[in-house]
Amino acid sequence: MSDKITNISKELFESDVLKSDKPVVVDFWASWCGPCRMVAPIMEELADEFDGKAQIAKVNVDEEGELAAQFRIMSIPTVMVFKGGEAVEKIVGARSKDEFAELIQKHL
Image 1: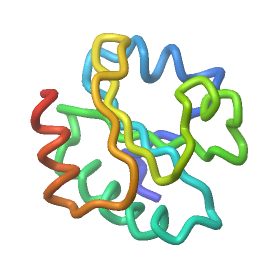
Image 2 (image 1 turned 90 degrees about the vertical axis):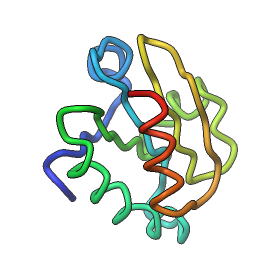
Image 3 (image 1 turned 120 degrees about the vertical axis):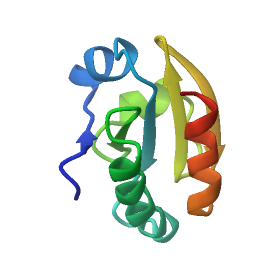
Image 4 (image 1 turned 180 degrees about the vertical axis):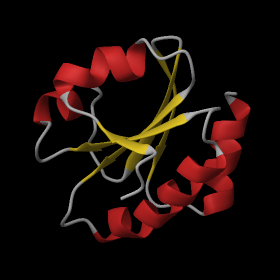
């Protein structure tokens, strides 16, 4: 995984996501999820392309069930954008790189 992508635990969520001065794109995923594996390389590319402008983070729903419950993650992959401590957008399901890039661009 790219060193520009942060693995988020519930202990780091507030400091790394909610208090970030940049938009944070959080990919809720699991290792057994086929569509999640399709999204992973896209997130890596976006982490490089938006380096310094937005942060890409991942939450493994199997390891961080409390976070998944807190944000009502019912299907994965779910990608949420957080800005200024608030969830501002949510996309459920695998999408194209262009769609994810557009989502990030909208919140810069």
